[in-house]
Length: 261
Length: 284
Image (cartoon, rainbow over all chains, first blue to last red; front, side, top):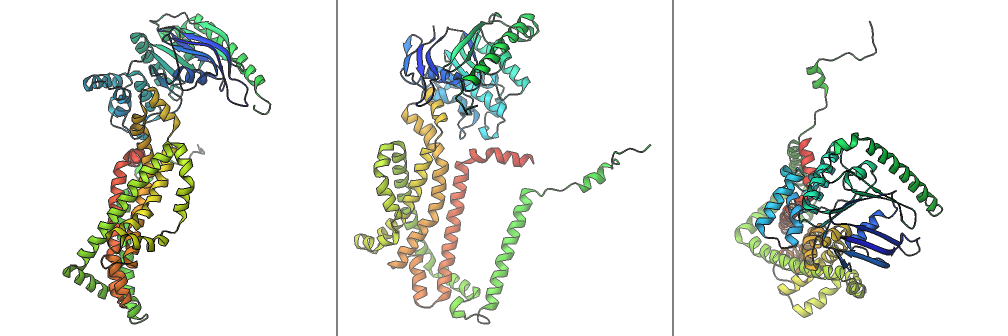
């Protein structure tokens, strides 16, 4: 297992616990999607995996070692814009390599590859304030991938993109993570996105958070997203997951403290 | 057959009626023309009114002031005194700004240090700086040190508070993202905290420059035998209105030049902040 979350308790003072004895894992090279209603605790799981939050009880293991601080072996793409506004696109993408002391030639080669991957070659000298929302997401993706972390943590990374660009990014992401055999822990609201991209979907809900169902997506690594969309299996799976998500939504609403809805 | 659709206009006529947006450059030139015109009108009225409507002893007249300025430029009065004031301003500004930045960074980064020092900093900040003048005079005498220290104490607090809030305001999300990439504490400071705080720090520095000049001039007026402040105080004590205005003109030029210089440096350092809006403006 690359990531193992075991018996984790987490919550904030004077609030109902978010996690209570929660278990999940991500295998090497696996693409796992976490699907659930807003505010259910999906991002908390990502923050635990990144070492930004520490469990009150239980353990988080990454690559066989217990996490006691920041996890430098993951790439983290959050919902927010975490590009450094004073650096150009190229400088932003290069940042992880510079921090790790990667040699100049290797940095330059990787930058070219990353810019090509996200189609930002022409914007390399622009500042984030000059980019559209979609371009910013692409720059963030390039920055998360450039140092080849064994695992990518992605928190609704393509929510701001238009449909066409999102499809392109889906294909690029799949081909990149497959090529590098990277694991991905992917948080999304989008049912189609979760089914198309992942090997496994965990439908989450309730408070404390629990796994309502684990769904296997039987498309294999070398998948053709356009073909999958046309298949009856996809339609069936999508309808099934949609039903589960409705249930999760209803539970979330029922579990919310009075006056919180 | 009649329809409700509006009649289709010919394109040239349609375009002729479209509102025309003035270019940025044209607006700048127009503004400059207005500024020059206002200055000329003001000086003309002043020249005319002096001795006719108001006593020349009180307001002098632009032509007499210009004559004094010319004389002081030729005989070296300006060069000698402006240089003294400028040197003290630069030293006071530099010392106060560096001290303010260092202490601001430390108190914002190490919260406990900030909490312990907070009442002392607040007490010193609220103390009227003029109250320190007699003490400084005793300690440093009439020389350069008095002026520099007086200006530095004014600049220090302005830069201190801006640095403090700048460092405290750094986005936690940015810090977390860069820490995950592998940044250590020093790298976080250089890559995230300092550039992020720079917006606040430069604002503090920009505000401080005129205050540094004010500090030096006040110190020169209080106790000094050289500098533009001394020139101003001496002219006023001799009822030389034109001398006072000539000294004020030198201060105006110095203030405008330093402001322009700082504005240029600030714009360059923070060009990332305006890059997006600049490109949008060009697109219009």
